[in-house]
Amino acid sequence: MKANLRQSVFKTRLNLSRQQGLAGLLSLCLSMALHAQSATPDSLYLDNLNEYCVTCHNLDDYAGSLDLSLLLSEEIPLHAETWETVIRKLRAGMMPPPSEPRPEWLQYLSLTQWLENQIDQSAPVQPGTKTLHRLNRSEYANAIRDLLGLEIDPALFLPQDTLARGFDNMAGSLTLSPTLL
Image (cartoon, rainbow, N blue to C red):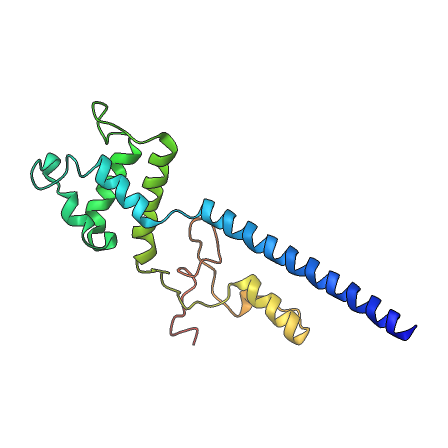
């Protein structure tokens, strides 16, 4: 009886592990197939540029005083200004000219987006500057009330807040002058 029970439990576990393994394998294959469909390698875009752009914009024809064959031999972000011009022409629908073969519309948009992404990914991040500033009158009154439990009139202690673009809490207008220190 115990042997039959053990054998039954073993078969159940084996079937479960087979089902789990099959489900795992199926989900892996499905995710790989979806990834393969959504992923487009850079070489496809480079082939599109060679097919639709470099045929005219090369060292021999030099259409528009532009040689894309030389630019494609290097990284795209190294010549960001030139590629920005290309992107503007593509966005305006000016290139390739109507007399030349053009890619399908979705392929055209995808190529333009890919060029923009190539430039944007290597662009330096410029977060701007953070200006050191004081609290405005109402912020100061709220901080004193919250921290110390005191109601004060900040007009007695602080100078008038200056407005910047209609706001009294803009960092640029809330500077720390030596008299406030």
